[in-house]
Amino acid sequence: MAVSGTAPALDDTGRTFLVLAYGPAGAGSDLERACREWADQAERLGKDVELHVHDRSDGPALAHVDALLAAATVGVRLVVAGTAQDVRRTVARARRAGVLPSELTEHVLADGPLDVFCPHCAATTETSARPGDTVTCGGCSRTLDIRAHVASWTGTFLGSGTDSEPRPGAHTLPVPAEEAHP
Amino acid sequence: MSDLLSAVPRAPAGKRADDRLQLVVEAVEQQAPGICSVTLADPHGRPLPSFVPGSHVVVDCGPRRNAYSLTGPCLSPRTYTVSVLHKADGNGGSVWMHALAHGAAVAVAPPRSMFAPVAGASHHLLVAGGIGVTPIVSHARSAAGWGQSFQVLYGHRPGSAAYADVLRELCGDRLETWDDQAGFLRRIGQALLEQPLGTHLYVCGPAPLMDVVGAAAAAAGWPADRVHTERFSGEALEPGEAFTARLARSGLTVAVPAGVSLLDALEGAGVEVPNMCREGVCGECRVPVLAGRPLHRDLFLSPDERAAGDAVMCCVSRGVDAVLELDL
Image (cartoon, rainbow over all chains, first blue to last red; front, side, top):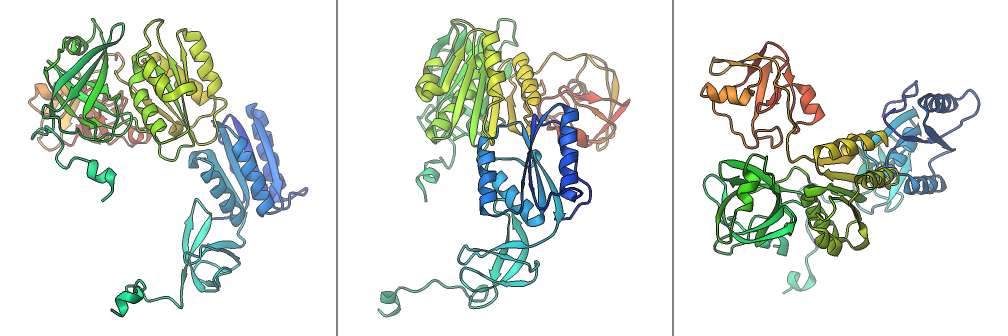
């Protein structure tokens, strides 16, 4: 997810716009400049724009996003801005709410941490590590390789165990006791 | 094996080398003034191939082959039911269908899906105009059966509401019907503004209705990938400019005069092209293009496929340039 310097233009085929932004939006910040551009463009188009800015994509912020998505109607275009992690998390919520890629505009202002999904225990662990690195799973304490694969519906990178797991091909199901000792 | 899989017939009933099902008329009934329903079954009572909701079959109607939507249950059905509006000034297919009697033999190509429901849609907004109700009945039946969120807006002429009873039973208060066009269009316009995220729109009806609803959806900000249409007839087309088709494989050069379709010209030159509807709807006569810009006039290709310019539906489409080179 590449960081981009300039704010992408709004998709003018939308009826209304919903901007979901994260980060410092003080005067002179990149985010403030981007939000102003979107507000100006919407005004030129004669269309409504709603701006919602949160510090970060934490639980309360994402719950607010879910509520906004639940109240939104077809015709809206989403603009998601923040760190790559904020964007991945929010796009995942939007996709689960039924938003199509054609209704989404992403603006990544900075890289930042990422979320790793553990397929062994289903926990998600936040880390500053990068794909190719390892991370300790916050759920089961396994060491996970971080794969360069993001699930768009969860916004998480895929982890896979590096230790305490059978080698590929050596995986066996536990044998019921009565079969093991007939 | 699941019940679903085991219910699918391994060798679909009545299948022949040419793929057409040889069926017999089990019932003909008046659905509404000028609209009859024809129920077809395998002569030996075997189940018919399953189909996706919104599918149609192409029926051999005497000298013509017409596409009709299937309105009945879609999983391993015992019968196929189609409904036909009598068109005295049509191509003769509807008149032929209306003359069918119990026990008559009818050849039917297996179901084709070009108007499928979108899996994962949070809500289905189904809009039907007139006899365009037939694939919508299929969608409503499936959505109701699977417990999906949906609603039906159905506009029809006064006293000519085909399938209104069936829909009422399937949909309950999720069905709204209109017999005045202004009220119908107003309601559609309103509905387009209040659908939850993730809704998909399906429209089937006369071409002017489809155009109006398509334009209203676009104006309401609906992206094209949320809007699904089923056109059951091509539009009247201009004769177009004369051009030349150059056939790369056979080395033939075929002149295509104004007013003659590329398909007719190819057939006239002895070049056989598989085809069915001959009005730009079914997608059967797709021909690869090697050079020259196509003038697309079909209803089949997606905008991306049109832009790629590497194929044409030769029954209606032509060349922009003087020469269109085809991979034939």
